[in-house]
Length: 413
Image (tube, rainbow, N blue to C red; front, side):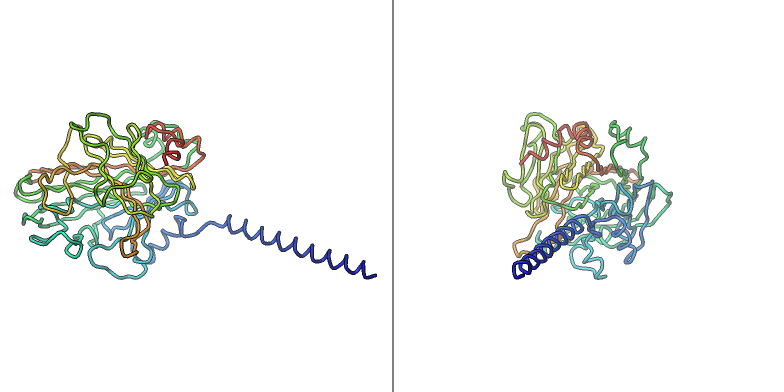
């Protein structure tokens, strides 16, 4: 009788143990299968709606969210509808606080418009005579908190504008107008852009045309300071994100180095790699660093691949051939203020005191310096592409547009 009792107890314990393990495993699987809502486009669009007015452009499952109050920046986008991945980095804590902070309000956004230069004798971020230190650095309101006006819109495009007057570090007053048109591309337009069959890939692609107009009565000249259009995109990092930038071959003495990594100090070889005519840069949001590509090296193409989430992001801009004058944003009086880079990438990371704005990473493009007569304009056109799908299909796009395979990218480090 005792033996039977012991067997019954053992059986019940084993059954209970098995059931608990099955329940535990089921909970792990359920948790793994439950998507993080903060990474979903619909969640982030609705979050933004609570705090500011938005404009949404949509074509089937492709959509982008624009905030006119923040210089008509594209805050985020999706290739798979409301439950799809939200591609732009959004500073939800700052936005939800309803507060404005000194120096800059980093609301986030995957495509925002700035103007250069940031530092130097023609800076528009430092007042005349002030030393080039952080306490004196101030983002102009028209690039930070001043809304852009909506001029016109359709389901697939929106045009914005703003009239501005600013003074640079040398005391030159610049009167200008910025116009910014954002267009969600059709399937045919996407194919014409990259010439790849995307039927097996989900994507969102948009073009922004950013125009700078001299509205003053004097010519903008090198000796008194020139502006440039500067586009910055803030994206979500992960341990698997690697940035790749093709560069043109050639003699370094003639067309400059393949990459400039002296912005915040040299970047170690385990985070930055030059391989033939490609630059690879880790974008994990854990180590602060910035790189630049000189204009005669730049192809106008750059991108990133997040292998964990199978996201290929591409940036394509039209850079004029042979132009060498790009504004230099270094925080110092410069010997050559027109020796800046055409393309940049930034990986966020903790500051010396342990604080951090993000984490995020950036892909950036710039126009040449705008030497404009009164009434003349300069346009900078940029295309942003986010693609998701099976690795073999994304690989075809990477090879075509970036000139490297996904294996080359993931195996760079």
